[in-house]
Image (tube, rainbow, N blue to C red):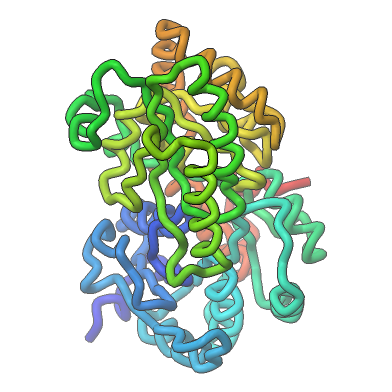
Length: 402
């Protein structure tokens, strides 16, 4: 008999569109690895065979399942996912990203899964009409929505018309053992960066949301004052050029040349060792148009590197201004360049901010804290579904957006 059929732990299936190098994907892997396995039996399902992050998942041979979505409107995903839910005896299904969200809602109802959990990972974006219709048609299929920012929960509630009490806010968390301070000299050498050069990094997929053009425009100004600065842009286009990210990346590369920045740029693509690359930086930049809780900001700060980010979503909470980095108005090229320059020219301030940043993330945004808060969401939702009115209100319940 399969062990999970006699297992009294909560059986959880995390479902995501793919396991490419993205923030949501990294968070799924980290969550699967760090949830308390004495309380939860955790499986992960990708709706694509593209799973490079599977290498970071513990015990992938047993826990990773692939239900390949053959084409955009492959409706067979739903019954196949329902069969997987029954085979693992899932009590809870928790989905990430649009395709997985809709498939999980329908499959969860088809399989009779007790708790269906959705996600909100961003704010202030625009859905395609078909996406909006799909969300609204399946709105009654979801029991709880976990948002990784207060702004995201409020945005999703307004956009889809959900009761605000449906939401639980759980900010992202990072593995502070992996992402930690250390000497970046070796990786600088590998990237052919000289010891006397300062490094400004941007860690992001090449997609419009991340706004690489604003970073490059500000960097042009920075180089006017600090000509030895190197620009480290870590990331690639999305899998198969999704959402026009291939064309966008080509446009960013053309802009690099148009601004005369090619010799100053380092473009390593996607990397499995991003923690080492953070340590090569003096400061990192996140000029996004919109966000949820940006993992890259937390990872950078955990490595002791201060962040300059646009003031979108919960960034002003994640990055307390003037303590661990700076937030600037969205689209403000002058302010972005000025804050980068301030950190580059004030070594003592930069190092002190980096130390405070590390302490802040270790206290408030560790992966352990994320896992504990998320587990409480599952347990409370199950208690509600089972009619256990004596179950104590959890910390997560009190975080519902009002």
